[in-house]
Length: 426
Image 1: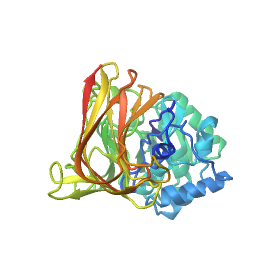
Image 2: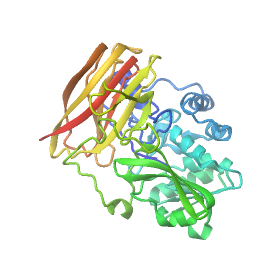
Image 3: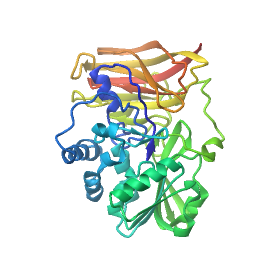
Image 4: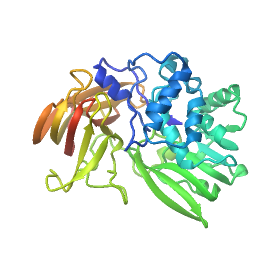
């Protein structure tokens, strides 16, 4: 499975380190594009990989809401450190994206578990995976199903994953290098299909190759605004359920180049900054993802419309946060003015003095191999609604950014509405 990554992290406080490497999940749900650097300093690992996996399953996966015992056991026994470069192995059992080469990463463990559980894997299933990446997702599926057919479009990644899976003895995982959106017709139909790269629309061959009664999980949408969708085939018809907003790494190949709506980094903007738009039949805000300990509040006191964002935490160090990504061209845009309405109640510092709410913006270059960060805030104590703003510098090499609203481990309640960014030319 593939995700975006960053490296070259600048010096930062310990709360911000924890904040950036936290499990980035929506409503105790999904961590897809984990915007933390592999180079971020982290605490010592447990004594053994077994202990590290147990902690990861207990604190990051089960605590986040995954409850299928077979999925939890597979996450507990799959050697995630074998699917990352040796330089990243000390970080393998933190729920974070890690670089695997070719501008791609292995996803955080939570998203692997979450998507696996949503497939409802059965021992007799034949599963098609689009986007082999490191091979980790296929390895997690392997003991849960009959056969995994996995396709990777990037040849170096695909060949390396095949070698790793073969070395570790995953005999029921069959891989090839090809355009995954064409599916694998000679092995169709498939009981389940899992897609770990985001097309603009659901590829028709995958719909055709899904068996009657089968399930497919796939992120669909624009480059910086996607929705994780669960599809079920019933009587030949596809039943669609929107799960969560998500943000996956750009695809490789013609499908990405052929997007009808291409990102425009010369006009960066936030979507749904007033939190008024939600997914159908839900209270999940569109365009914002990887939330933790967040909810939408409604009332006449909203500063724009009728809804606003509420982050609340009672345990020092726990994340309470939400994210949005957007394109930005640092050659054209030199600064960003960030403006929002904020209100707080009983904000207390977390585990250290600088563990307090802030807006953090992280910038990435085109290959997502270089990054820098800036922030607006922080805020402490209790105060009524007020308008706050700040200006951050944009690196000339920046092509993507992620804005994060977070409490950084502080306790109390922090509420936000009408979030805007205003680009300032270089």
